[in-house]
Length: 147
Image (cartoon, rainbow, N blue to C red):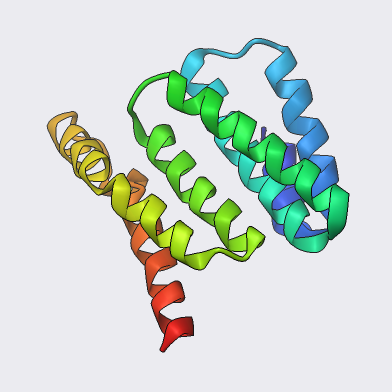
């Protein structure tokens, strides 16, 4: 995992495909559930980044893969990774060019974001893990571009 993170910091654009493959290998080792959900979340984000760099059928292929991973994460239950998958779904819509749908996606899950925050507080976990900041940031970017 450390090597993967180092690669991610070194040159993110040039390493997305390498990271995608590294995460696939990590998932093949059948890690514990929490690690698996985190890696899946990061892998979906990588597919979105790859889609941003591509066009046409390649872009669509990457977005479908990201969507598939997000669906898998969401079937695993409501936790911080579920919340992160919502942000990834909104980013998928942005890459597709539908910022209005991205806004709707985030707003639709606002109650779940609140539940995740409540869960983090109850379990005395760091609030930095909350997906709320990422969702608000994404909405802020969309509003700024609209303005």
